[in-house]
Length: 286
Image (cartoon, rainbow, N blue to C red; front, top):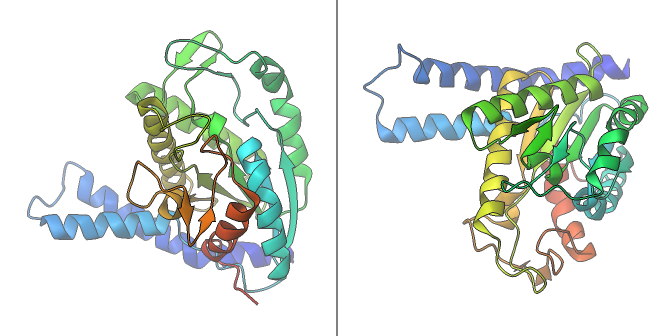
């Protein structure tokens, strides 16, 4: 019953995504209308991105069940998301592993540095995925900044900043979706695209490399949503945390949103952004 309700609730948002994706394909293929004006092209792009982030409309039917999963950044946000979800009548649970991502392989930098703890993370990926898949949920919300990094996998270097690397990254994320929300399960995955880091007293301004990684990660996740519109949405945290691009503000409405490293959330910052994320998830406020 709950899965049927969740699947029905997804139908409207899915139709929006399919329509937006179809319009984009029609406008970008070999048969594209070359008379499309810049304003019309911009409007089409805005509509497409809105579809990829379209609300799940989960208010109808049984109260939705969420699992909030991811790395240490998710770990600083998930308690506030869970509290906000419960305040709105939804069920919420958490599965986070600081320092670890949900993709296979070893996260690395472009110059080849591999953090020493990532080998232990890689070994636990299969079990962690199974754990999340077994948790009762209609929607799995994933925030994993490590999964936006270049990585080595089976001896190959994967750079999402290249065409081939992004194609491989998209495939890896599609496999992740299949593991957490198999086709026909009635589950969906919502990826929270990380915001560009804010300036931090410990880290200084965000480096060009980190800025590019955050942007590339968002692009990769949107491609996954285009490929799997029935099960995937993307919510861009940057729309609230860095709306005008770098340098990102360190506070909003008098609230310091992120810690001294510029990435992890302060408790106050998590409480500030949680209602916005739940709104984007389509869970109405009480």
